[in-house]
Length: 161
Image (cartoon, rainbow, N blue to C red; front, side, top):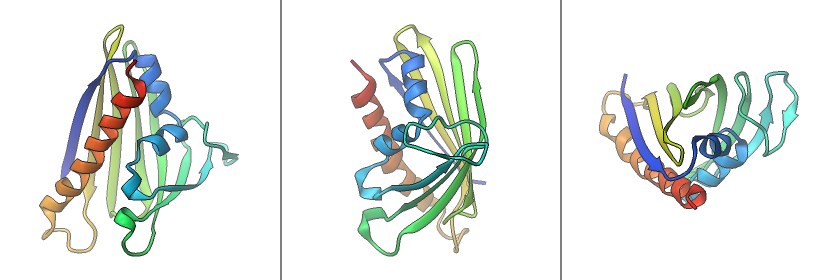
């Protein structure tokens, strides 16, 4: 299965980076404008609707839609947080697409304290491309690279002081 990975060092403590990425408002702030993201509904593990300050706990479901480059119909996407763990100088949460344009999408968001003021942020996505899976291999990387590069730039801009 194809895998995409990208990482960035952020001059900000792990606690701040983790808290920011662990909330819906972080997802909204980090998604490139050209994706035209709409978070339509967030439900916690208990099934109760949550707002944009919701923490992405294991079991949380997020329904959203996107219209990349404002072309074509909006793409619906439902993801579930399957794992959320914090350890000594590390933190991770993972989400899996339950419904959306990719047959497979497993995204691990990992955070590592390098020292008291620097955090390594790593995104790792295992995926299958839609429809013509075997033919479009490099397109996954081509599409992911600008999106994650922009996400990591935004992370630095928002969190570095």
